[in-house]
Length: 132
Image 1 (cartoon, helix red, strand yellow):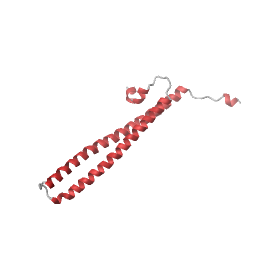
Image 2 (tube, helix red, strand yellow):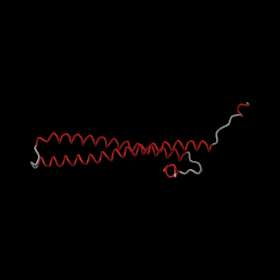
Image 3 (cartoon, one colour):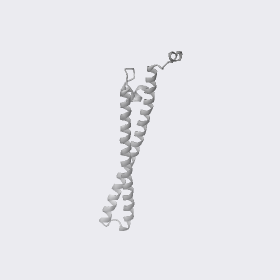
Image 4 (tube, helix red, strand yellow):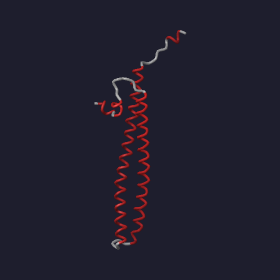
């Protein structure tokens, strides 16, 4: 029985600080991944627009006789590139939605475990704000 009375638990404030630190690291990682996805998507969208414009002008030039019909293979390559961009952009959009869902879930976990303390949800939602 003496061993039962000798057991000590950690201070709940220390547990909370550990949880906040862990959730903060996870939030920063999710934000970093989301930013990477968004940057890749933006770059692909710019290249997509360029390829689509080039393809449209080339097709128009071929139809008007300003470009040789032998350039149809170039149109095919542009079309293939455009379709690849569309697939990748759609995949990145799904990944972005996943990141938003994970971040929302993380915020919900934080809200669920929230107790009155000096750290607020606003601090957690914007970790850089508390790092000044």
